[in-house]
Image 1 (tube, rainbow, N blue to C red):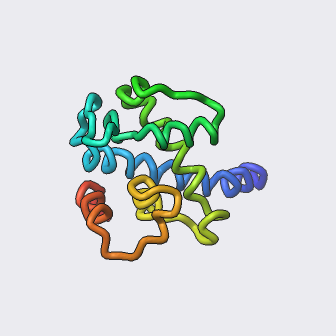
Image 2 (image 1 turned 120 degrees about the vertical axis):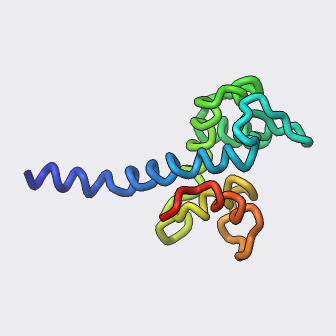
Length: 134
């Protein structure tokens, strides 16, 4: 029994992070593309999460896996790309504190150091409107 509790405690940060992203990703999709998997942005961003070619290259560097622009039109693949990117840049070791959903959203919108931006931020406000009430 103690071993099971210890395993649960060790896994807790990952479970919390996954739960945060399970809630956050639909909100990001709503803000980025209104849920349109085939969306193409004004600067070439693609898919439901409006992924850029720069982000794709960064995820390739991080994971060793190469994704194509056409991969971003698949919602499941877009979410995998986003999770890889966000988990790399938004973590307790890098932020020196537990990450928040705001940190994830700000890094998604503004890049690896987006979590440092000060409030109020219009992007975060948009995302918040799509999050479930606490």
